[in-house]
Amino acid sequence: MEGDQETEVYTLVARKPSFDLPTACPNCLPAYIYLKLAQLPFELAFNSTFPDSDELPYFENGTYVAYNNEDGGVIEKLKKDGIVNLDAQLQSLPEYLSLKALIASWLEEALTYEIWVGTEGISTSKIYYSDLPWVISKVLFYKQTCMAKNRLGITKENAEQRETQIYKRAGEAYEALSTRLGEQKFLFEDRPSSLDAFLLSHMLFIIQVLPETSVLRCKLLEHSNLVRYAEKLKAEFLEASSSSPSPPLQSFPSSFTRKGSKPKSKPKVEKTEEEKKFKKRARFFLAAQFLAVVIYLSVMGGGSSDEVEYEDEDD
Image (cartoon, rainbow, N blue to C red; front, side, top):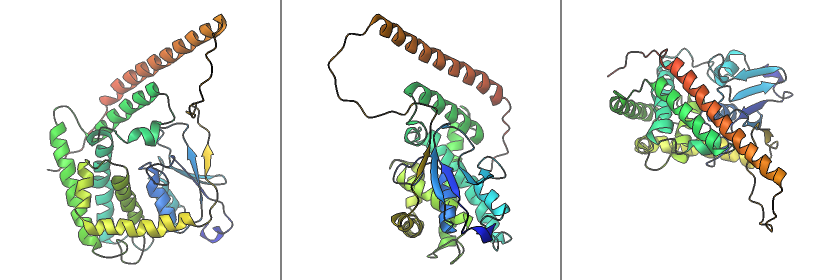
C-alpha cells in the first residue's frame, strides 16, 4: 500500500480537540502524532457518539479500518499491514524493546492513574463528556474511574502503596528517557519512531492538559531536555503542519443532543396544559434513563470486579 499513498485518502477518526491539542484524547493523540511524524497526508474527523468507546481512535481508507481495540492498537496495525512503519529498522534493537516496555507500561500506567485518580478526573469532562447531559457524564465518569482502578490493581487496602509505586516508577522512567535522549532530536538520533509518537503525546498531554498541581507534571518538568524535545517536535510537526493548507476537519454526528449557545431571553409565555404534561413526561424519562444506567453499571460492575486478575507487582 505504501506505493499508493499519493492517491489514497486516509482518515483518522478521534475525539475532539481541546487544551490547544488537535485531539485531547490520550489514546488518540499518539496515532495523530505518529501519522504526522511519518508525514502521511490524512484527514482528521471527530466522533462523539460513544464517549467511552475503546474503538477510538480508528484509521480508515475505503473498506480498510484499523481500530484502537484490535491488533495492539492503530499504530501497530498500520505497521503490520504496511501502511506506514517508522520502526522497520529498529524493532530488533535491544534499546528499542526496552524503551517500548518502559513507555507502554510504567508511563501509560502513571498517566491512567493521574487522569482518573491523581487529579480526580478534573480534565475528563472536556475530553469525553462535554456534549452529554450532566447526569450521564457523572455516571460514565464513575464507571471509567472504577475500570481504571481495576486495571491498576488499586483497592482500599493498597491505594497509598500503589500511588507511591506508580509515581516512583514514572520518575525512574523519566530519568531513563532523559538520559537516553540527551540532546538528540529523536530517541533514535535523527530517525522518528513510534516511541517518539507515544512519548511526545504523553508529554504534551501532561503539560497542556493536567493541572499545575499534578505530581506527574512536576516530575516531568524536572527534566529540561525532555521539555525541549517536546517543544521542538511540537513546533516542527504539529504547529508547522497545521499552519499550511489542509483539508477541513470533519465531525461525525453524536447520538446525544449537543449543547447549544444560550438563546436570547424572550417574553415569558404561559404554557398550555399539553406542554406541561410533555415537560413532566420528559423529566420522568430522564429519571428512568438515569436509573436504568445506574442499575446496569452496578450489575455489570459487580460481575466484572471478581474477574480481575493482578500480576505480581515489583517493589
